[in-house]
Length: 426
Image (tube, rainbow, N blue to C red; front, side, top):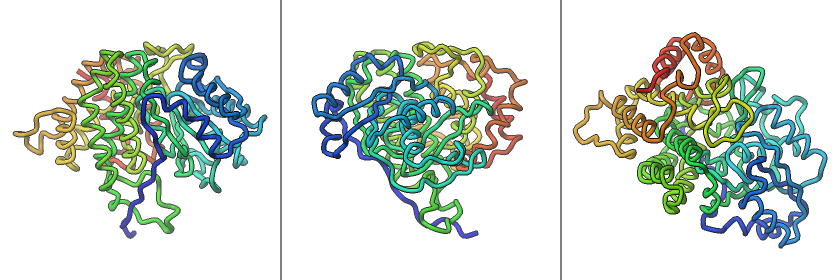
């Protein structure tokens, strides 16, 4: 089969600056919107970012309805609840105010109400779903992130827990991308420290994975340009965004977590999340994310600090980073120079390092961040044991969209070893 010879660059428009949330009413007015659905989660519904959005819509004469039942770490059931709610109204624009859970839910609502499928799994990534293409353009979606992590305001991906599988999966299409992301540093003031830590570690892993992903020209050439996947593999444009996101994480993540009043650090981490989102939204992520999906989907009794939920919840950024040191030790032999460059961007001294040490150096630097930010010490710390590894492997294997981007192939045996190594971090 012929290898790929081209790559594409796609991203949402973003606007950054203190107070830009107040411009959402003007944006919708300029778009000619006549009725908007605002989506958020129960904790945020009465807080400043949402109230600012609603005031802006009122000031500019945009009728709206508020849906505030978004589930943190959404499921297929919570997606369908939001879709059913939206289907009872008539909206020509959507506004998502919150973290990645809210923005991803809004993407799904936009898709499923605009082009209702015969079955919920029709648009879901194969082999779990059919992976049907989005039939046409979607309605305007404006994303207003209140966390500095997912970069969902720039990407065409919506992730959720499929409850019957106890694993995450998702929907991926360039058409899912928000029309506009409003990056307002004032909105991240409400992040508790552990939320800032978890979302910031997600930024770190997004950037690392996209920078070390299989190169775009090592993937199969599509039959048609429209079939080129959103996750294409590392490429010269995504590399720029990913490596700069790592440098920003190195400078600002610890500051943003340890001092919530550090406005510069919080603002720069919000930018870093979008930088990493542009990087991985075009290159993709690989094993840490693929392995994280069953880890978060199968969690039994872990309740994360700073997340006021009535259900067991492992924040996505933690589920990803717990696997990362083991993964990057494993993938380093496939592209050691890239792993060393990533470690240097994160603040490691690689001046006298040998290529054979790349995996250890990068893993050690990740562990430094994990310990400084009080991350759980491996999978055992969140309730997993060696007896869970077969099910974790089983939940990872179907995640083809991301696992096949690993620079070093990983089958059942390799994944088992990686999960075993991730049981304890240090």
